[in-house]
Length: 356
Image 1 (spheres, rainbow, N blue to C red):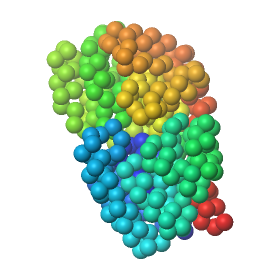
Image 2: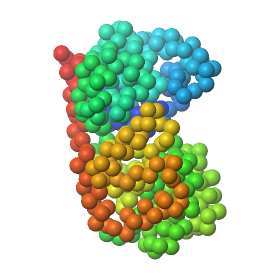
Image 3: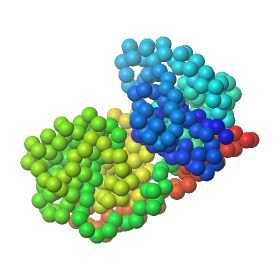
Image 4: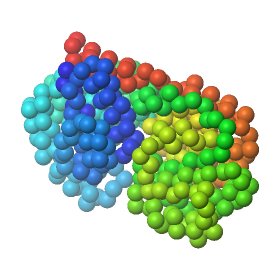
């Protein structure tokens, strides 16, 4: 079986796509290729994972200037032609759209050429690419039951994450570790607030260690913000990007992060307590909706950006660091939300589409 996976941009699109690709390759012997754009994380993560990547030129349509939308519309015909050429040369049995810039043109080309299609949608409200093709695709894999209404045929599968997250044991006793990260791009609000929070936490908890992922473009400026706040300690590590997320999450007692769909799925699989700060400008407020699921289950505490300041965040984090029993209960609640076989279920959907 040959499968083309289309889309990317951020880790929220690329990481689940890679989990699907590994399942298709390892469990079903499929040949998997990706199609993405030069601006996304797929240019690094897909080749590192051992998969071929084809690039097309396509821009943004949502939350951008009129001129950017005009350029994007001008590029769309070429993007469709490029995708059609890839489909004719690779001859996939199924095209899987995971959202992001390249997903729309590739899925539309597949629909026009009558190649079976599967849309993957992790958020409660589909992104633009999946909304455009929702009623035309052969099937859809979604994370929330309410999302099925946007597609013709949909199954609730959950979000695929690496199997290593499910294998993580509860955090053992020892040094307290706080992990702070804002997704693949970092989170400026956390980069701004955490240096002031860290000073008080390090004083209150002598055994505390802090790992702060600032984002590729903000590593040095965030490290300088920590130094300016008087936080100069071997117990604090500020980095632009974290490659070993399984190990980092596994070693954390508490996590402060955004609430993108993939992040929430990884927290659930790992069974870790968290403080979630949804990205206020996320399309359709989907990050807040993702966070609501964990909060309602007792797996997380949510702090909105509008409420975020050093005093508020510091108090919430300190309360949780002091209460190991509560963190344990939150971790168990998070694990209860996990979908251990999401990648397997999606791979089986691909098989059914390829061999009706």
